[in-house]
Image (cartoon, rainbow, N blue to C red):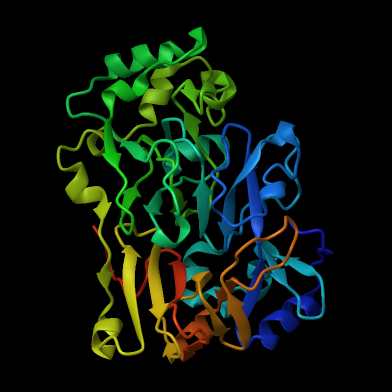
Length: 410
């Protein structure tokens, strides 16, 4: 998080949204993970990947448009993982309180009436090695520990991957025919130390930059060593099922992190976290793989000023687009829903703000690359200019549940 002053005054919250005509700038939200090794592709200064100390682990995530905090144990900072709105007169505003203050005026009546908050966010996940094989709970299972479920999705942005890390292969789901008994035997190996080899029952998929995957709650996954753009539900619930990752043992406490205390040691409870039909789906690729496709508005515009693609589109919980504005062009882009935005290439303006992709950011430094657009500002249209002469201005945009333009998914 930044070292600037954080406050929650109503006047500052009103001032911030008024100054940008419904668009606000967000400060970078850096998140360390003790069980990961930074891939150093999220544009943080090389000296700052361990800015919080070795006992906290390296910074390998940046959370985007986040109204939730990370769960990183007792040393977690008060705003870790939470986006902070930049007050134009100085200081920062917690995004969860910002949403709660503006309500439907920020996220729109549809989302506010249905969810009473901003229930999605995105992140850059950036690990040198793959993550351990793990699962995120469904809403039903997460409710047992007072949380909400966590479906997520991946987009492998070419703009964020100058190299592919140590293992650009993701293990996703389970081989058709895998049984509970087989998986239980591997889970029981966890306490013995070393590698429980649980991914023997999964399938590995080589990374294709410019594509992605949909990972519903209940589906096991070990994401590859790629800097990944990940829209997801606003939750940090998980169960680590693999005992060896990043060339070291995974703490057993992470296996039981979000399991009710009276079920610690109960491997059948962990097996019940899994959606067996989705994990063992013989058509897993057809149902979960995502190859981008152009939006209707972009096709109608003919490609002269910009192109825009759907990059995440298989979930009702969130969705995402990639917008590329051509050099020297100015466009006005309308949306039916509020959204978070991150600039990954180029420079120009975004509404009334100067906008520029980050090159090297110090921990605690503000940036000009991240914004949140209110529902009204999105509907009226955001004027975006590319001031570059050679490069596209590229922006990734993530949306909340039930995107109106995308329509029902299934």
